[in-house]
Length: 470
Picture 1 (cartoon, rainbow, N blue to C red):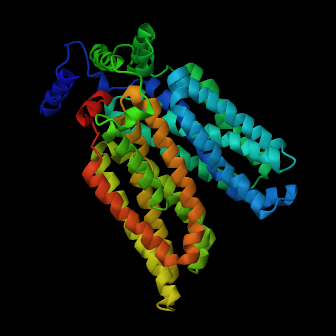
Picture 2 (picture 1 turned 180 degrees about the vertical axis):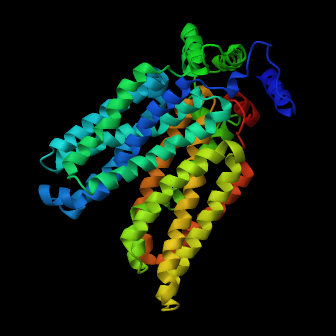
Picture 3 (picture 1 turned 60 degrees about the horizontal axis):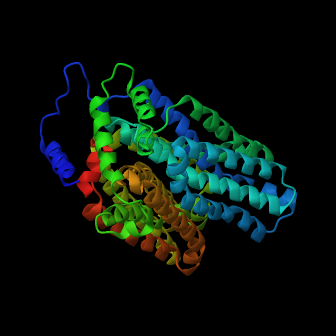
């Protein structure tokens, strides 16, 4: 391991590109059409994730009226998604290590599709909740395995951009539920959630498995075939294959990872960075703002319809054009820093709008202040904190820790998401402006955390990243 670290440091210190055989190419810089196809198939899982999260909002009154549910019963329906997602996150790492990245995506698509069909045929609250739980389990697993799969198949130059497609398709899936839900009933909307499951399940039969996983489980011949497909039939994969094999051979001598290994001194930085980013991604208040954006606009005296349309469009556009195009040009850390600073400004704008309203001051500018604050906040989240924590999570963990550590990180994300959603209304009752000042304080802590601990992973192979962090 020490020799490998020294080699990595020497490689990283060189100002000139590494030389390859004359007839070869730096495969880590290239991708065949199969990489793009594989990514598109995988992000159908991200789209499915978004549809699960976005389903409850446009269907609330239709479900409550047809099935005669109370507000408390519908709250159970909405929140049980998180319960299923936490369980999916806990098991996601082990499942993806045992049956492969593609196997985990197939299993999740089947479970999610069954959940949607149960919701479609539900006659009362019990099957409705069970179906919602199953869709939650599916998207909890997908929230881990999709970014990991994309990171493991992507060449270094494209890894960041391709990985951010995970977040882009999540927000597209969420937005689609709002748009389609405006013109169809809740049962038909549930059927639309089956479509990405079908595409994901059948699509995975036409794409290669993660080469790193194949090598990890000893399928050496399949490893070379998969890597060649991903890099193109004429690409020289010798160097990349040797780097992956050498790194995995070193890891093979290490004992099987357990939860106790996560707090070992040689692994603790991986865990702190991964858990910390997921913690801050949620505790800056994003789910409170998104789930209750209309309430924020109404409380501030602004139009909820106009505000919701504006931030939905903004979220999709900035995720697509911002993070996807800039992450491999500017790097992960600069975008995370800009994102956290922008969210801090957004929190202050929203908080100040509520403070002015509470004191009856500058009433004419309060709606504009609230709407602009939400737009700045959502826009800033979209360019950095939304996508990049998942990208970094998929990059930093050694492959022997990926299942255990990735599962832990995903659980932290879902539990944090639930806690922020659960506490938002209580905080707003306590103090509307105080709520956003608290979130602003978390943004400040996030800025410090990013500056001190988060590594820059742009332009490095996964093996180089892990050697650097060790």
